[in-house]
Length: 518
Image (cartoon, rainbow, N blue to C red; front, side, top):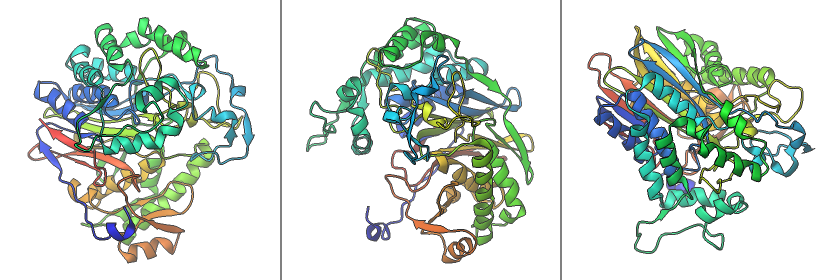
């Protein structure tokens, strides 16, 4: 969309309300989760069903070849937990495989240039995937339905294939150059001559078969989650990986376990913020809010003081992150969704293949599109986040559940790599410190402070806000386009403390994002 045209448009989006709500970057996936709620499942059941189904409707973002984190508020236990199912490098990985051949920046992470871009594309870029283990761990501990029942919608969608539309065509076009290098990826995502699949002039519904993913999902539903890590499916996955040159073995898959861990929890102006900690972006969120201090407090639409405090706080927090942790965050192809139910359970779940279509590898035997989690590692040696065997990397994921007076208030998170933390920070503080309702907050223009380059400021912010930030830090004005989004892609569900009604909201400019209610 041209700037002149977008200046004539005002895009709005309505929130979704109900006693149970699921909001996701793909409205079809949200409907899967809402249907689980209608059938008597709780928010965790709904989140797992959504997570297992979403790979069949947006396979460039996530799928069972991916990784992630979730933060859960358990109504039964009256507390928050984090489920960690992040990537791990292969135990027999040789760091010398990722030879530095140039100074970079070779990609959005600003890493040095690596031989054949092995940390970014192809079989060497793949880390051990944790998504199946993570969702299974959450379901076992906090869910109420069976594994087979929550997988059923995902099986059905995978067997049907991916429905082609304009947005999908855009995503495939963006990934075509790398997809065309891998036979199974090319055969399933592209036409024989390498073109992007199209619809006829009548717009006849068309589905793209995702290799053997439908059969794989059925095997997983029937065999249980460890089928992915220890069964015949695991052996098929390992065989394909090793045939392509990956260091990941059957033993790596068998050894993988997701973890339920303590969240990073801290107080801010009368609420408790629970977020994934450790190697995620949670510590950067806490540091930013700590540095912003009292300046974000007020009533109604945030003004210059609010944005200046966040800009300065986040700028400092990212400087500290980059110096002490070695992470150079990027804009990645991730998905985030939230689920909440009438019992008081809440889930903020972020999962990813990392880059667009991950490694761009679809495994021939299984139809699984694999992550490129090795890109999260710093290829420079002797640093905290350097590439090594059997190691977990840093990431930008930031799923949050906020409680007030000991009860769940809202859950929030986003996709967008380096843009996640700025979005989650601003939206959370608009709710906590400014008293905005979630629909109003999501329609407010935002800034992006990502630690690299000038602060990106939505051109729709008032001039006095832009001038106030520019007086302290360099800025650049940008638009918030439909594709690619100018900022992050957040989702949020808020609980009314009086009535218990849930209100869900997604990024206004994301055409696929939406919610569904029980």
